[in-house]
Amino acid sequence: MKTINILTIDNFFHDHCSYCFIYPILKNQKTFLENGIKFKLFQRLNDDFENCDIAIVDSRFYGNLKQDEKKKFLEKIGLIQNKTNKIIFADTADNAGQIKSEILPIFSEYWKGQILKDLEKYLEPHYGGRYFTNYYHKKFKIYDNDHQYSTPVKNKKLLKKIKISWNMGLVNYGNLSHILQKIFSFIPSKFLLFDSVKLVKPQVERSNDFSCRIGFDYYRKTISFQRRKIVSMLENKINFSKISRKKYLNELSISKFSISPFGWGELCPRDFETFTKGAILIKPNMSSFCTWPDWYIKDKTYIPIKWDLTDIIKIMENSFNNYALSKTIAVNAQEKYKKYILGKHASELFVKHFVQLI
Image 1 (tube, rainbow, N blue to C red):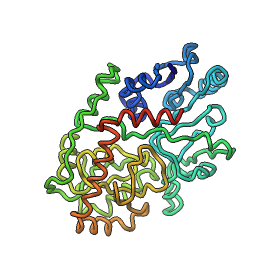
Image 2: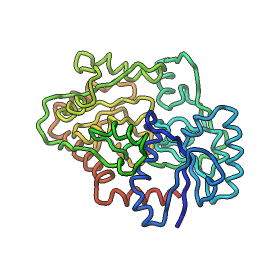
Image 3: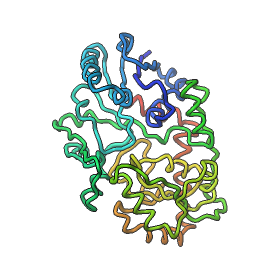
Image 4: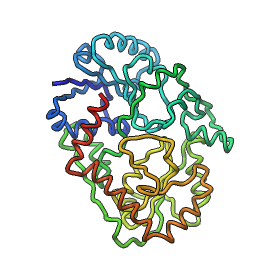
């Protein structure tokens, strides 16, 4: 039996990213045990943490440490490195464009749910800490009040440590998902890790054309730019006002299309809510990124738009006018979602991916 210890945060109430990392591991424990793997979670670094075959550190745990604590923590990790077969840093942030470059030399591997397809882009600094914020800064001269750049990786050889783990699509996005996550934060029972998803077939009659209930009041201008531009371009065509989750999911269920821009990261829970409710996903082009599962296949599982949004109105009009043909995109996306989340072999697919990683 192979033992894997995971050092993570002690409360997932307000941290969807760490929750997305831990969720499929805990959900699929039975299949892991059948494959000779057992896990143990830690909320603090102690001597027992190093008693394992493989150790994993959640980036959220590291990020919550004070600056002086981080230095001592990394020194301790260096000592543990000599006692375990492998120690892995799991970057659970929901964006692809930023790597914690100070971590790469210390850990055996660096896992991330979504990464840049061209790893050498990590050798460059990105304004705003993300690949797409750097794009908006350069193309549209967008500046944040607090100027910041991602710290580039200095040693090209370290890039080989970066591996794709899994993305936020593997958690529950059903009608009760937000409630179950809150309860799990206080009562971490595996019995709460079930899918409350109620799928709506894409073929049902849909009375609403486009859904895009988004917020855009981010304090970073490079983050909010894309969303604000979409609102300014489409405010006479779509209602962007926030509504209750129940009403929002009901709206998705009767919508032909769902527009899902980037937020703090490129992936968004709306992507997967769109899949479950059978709408067609329209999203800024994802071809610069690699992720697992690969939900984003151009004109097969989503309809891409340019990052500068110059084609968004044309794409919307063409897709709407060819809705009968475009509907196959929603069908494909929902089938893929079922395969990795609800399918008979979903658990085996995740465990197989995990085993290949380690």
